[in-house]
Image (tube, rainbow, N blue to C red):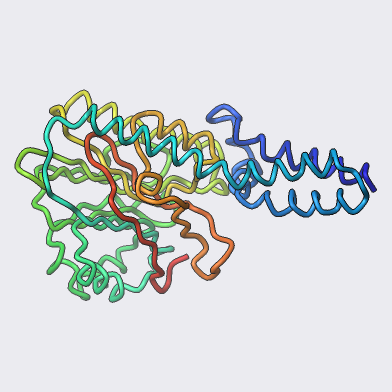
Length: 319
C-alpha cells in the first residue's frame, strides 16, 4: 500500500511542478488543462497524507502534508509579492496623481448568448465607465443597442468579425470620449484586440483593450503565443506615450497565475488587478458551479494606476 501511495504522491508532485516550466513550454496538450487544475491538488495531497498515516508511513504523510500546504499557500504568497511590487511600482512610476476612479467590466459573452438586457442594466446600475466584451456576435451588438447600452456608454470600438475568431469578436464600450481608437491594437493568433485611448483625467491618458486569447482546445501553441503576445501592448505604449500614462487590458485570457505564459505576460509590465485588490482569486469559470471554479478573466494594469476593488457576478447566458 505504501508503494502505491508513494507512486501517486510522486505523480502529484510532478503535476504541481508543471507550473515551473518555461513560458511557452506548456503549449502542448494536456498541459494547459493540467496546470489550470493545480489549485485543487491540495485535495489529493491531503487524501494521500491521511492514507499514509493510516498505513504508518510518516515520511510519505509528511511529504504529502507539505505539498498540500504549499499548494494552498502558493497563490497568497505570490499575491503578497505581487501586491508589494505593485505598491513599489506605483510609487516609482506615477508622475502625476489624480482622484479619478473608473469602474471597468469584462465579460465573455459565450458565442453571443449573454443576456443583452442584463448587461445594459448592469452597466447602468453599477456605473460602469468601460465595458469590454468578448465572443460577440452582430446579433448581440444589435441586442445591446436595443437594450439602450449606448445611452450609458455612447462610444464603442469593435474588432473585425472574422471566421477565425475564437467564439466571436471583441468590443469596447466607453462613457469617456475617445482620443483615438482602433480595431486591432496588437497582432496575436486570436480575435482582434480593439483599443480605445481616453483621458479619464486632464493629466492622464489610458489605453483600454478588450482581449480574448484562444482556448487550448483551439491550439495550444496559439494559446500560449496569444497570452505572451499581449505584453507588446506595454512596450508599444511605453515607446509612444507620455510618462505616467497607462494600459489596461480586460478580458478572458484563458489562463491563471500557475500558467508560465501568464506570468511572462505580467513580467512584461502588467499588474493583475485581482492580485492587487484582493487576497484570493477572483474565480469566474464555470458560472454554473459555486465550487470549484478557476480564474480565467483578468483586468491587467500598467503604469501608475491601481485597482481598488474587484467583484465577480453572473450574467445569464455566459459560462
